[in-house]
Image (cartoon, rainbow, N blue to C red; front, side):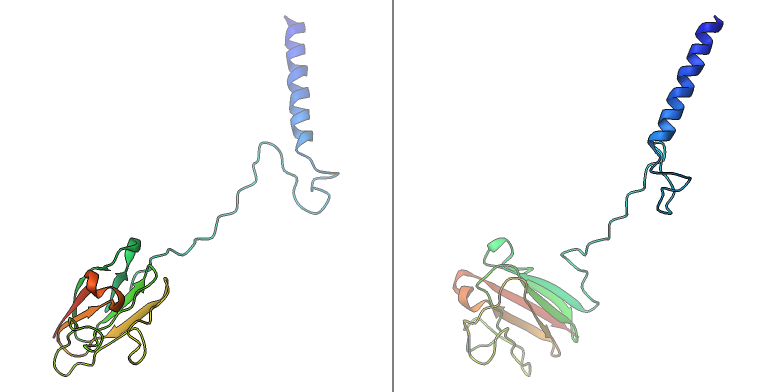
Length: 167
């Protein structure tokens, strides 16, 4: 029994020595370059990945988000927004070929409360000017009442939205 026991102890010692030597990278206690040697028993920790920003950010207080043409569809989501005087609506263009306008000269369905300035995502009377996907347009509402707006190129297909502003 002693012979078997001694042989087993020798094999264990040889295996332990081989494992220790396999983890060394050079002469001495450090890896030869000033860094600590690593053994197979001590895994190197993986670096923590940096967080990536999300596509959808939480809107600031007083800002309501409206998607323009989500999933390539001819609609505003939501198509009815209820906000307070002083709040802002931010339209985010999610597909090509759209704009936002409450100018009565752009479409007969557009309307604004008395004393309110109409809004549009384009300059002057360029009713068919569009914004590319990823762009945004914002308008801050200072007069209470109901605003009906359209996407001028698609108003005939029902791309109409409403902003209800209360005191």
